[in-house]
Image (cartoon, rainbow, N blue to C red; front, side):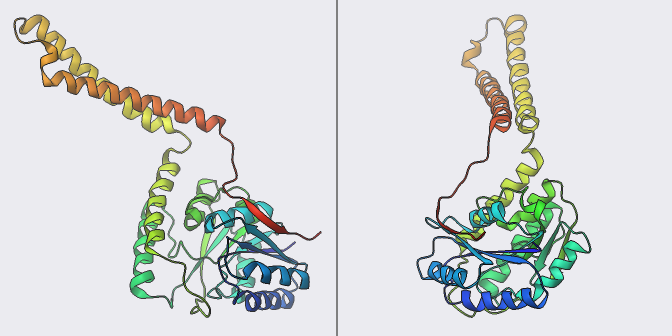
Length: 316
């Protein structure tokens, strides 16, 4: 199979028929073998009903329906587990991403051998205050922390080699950082393509300030994981050892001072320096144990599903 088109959605019943027709037209005009996988992230409108009708009409259409709303990251993760195409395209269901971009994205993966191509909505039609400005700040921070020189980390239109999506675990709000996750997994040929951005035709945007805040929190998480995720002992063990050494040396100094220089002075336990030393040793021990436990968890953890699927549509 040439292509898998993965489309997460929430309450996009109006746009789905038009989006399907547009994708099918592009696929047929380029003679691609393909599948279109709609992931209904707990919609409360008729989105799933529309997907069922499209699936009856075209066996290339498949669907996954979540029990409730788990978020875009979980929807993409569920889709990535089942896709079969050599190239995987992700796009939003609101018609703001153009399926006409798919052939060029496909060629960049197949002919130019990129691992991942991220779309760049250079000209946007979103609210400048509500979405454009926060996105620019977010992208600047993401570039700085990740080292990837991408302009638009959050663009839903991306293309991947199949092996890339099979080797990344997307959770939380991490869909914004799939290029970073791919880089951390060893896929270094990551490119960018300017793509057309269209004004929303149906429904309302799902973007809110809470997602913006969560995105920055996840950025901190992914920075930490990329640096120390595979070696927590290197951070916590080092900090713990330093803290314990400082506390121990401080306590040793207090002991020597009491034994040899100020024998008649007040008790060590009456000096505030004693409690500083004690706290430093306790914190050092706890940090060291945190790193040790982290190493144990890392070596014994297994991936677990973070969503519950209600229904599925498959063919063949």
